[in-house]
Length: 137
Image: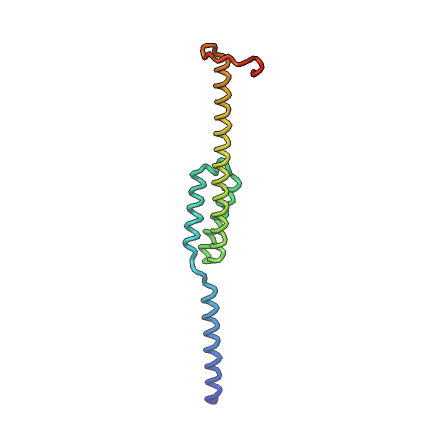
C-alpha cells in the first residue's frame, strides 16, 4: 500500500467521522424541560378547576397525551416530547377554561333561580308593603 493510498483512506475515514458526528449532534435535541413543566402545570390547574368533572373529554385528551409524552421521554425522543407537551398544555388550558365556564354558567342559573324565588316571596307576602299593579303580574 502506498503512502498516497493511506492518506486517501485517512481522509475518507476522517470525513465519515465528521459526518457521523454532525448527524448525531443534529439528532439529539435537548430535553424540553420548560415545555414539560408548562404542560404539567396546565394539567394541575385543570384538575384544580374540576375539569375531570366539567370537561372530561378535553381532560382525557390531555392525560392520554401525558402518557405518550412520558413514553417518548423514556425513548429519548425529545422532538416528540416537545410536540406532545405543547398539545398537552393546549388541551389542559381548554379543559380548565371550559370547566370554569360551565361552573360559572351553573352559578348564574342558580343565582337567577334564587332571585326568582325572592321575587315570588315578596309578591306573596303582604307585610312587604309592595303592591304591584295588576298588569305587572
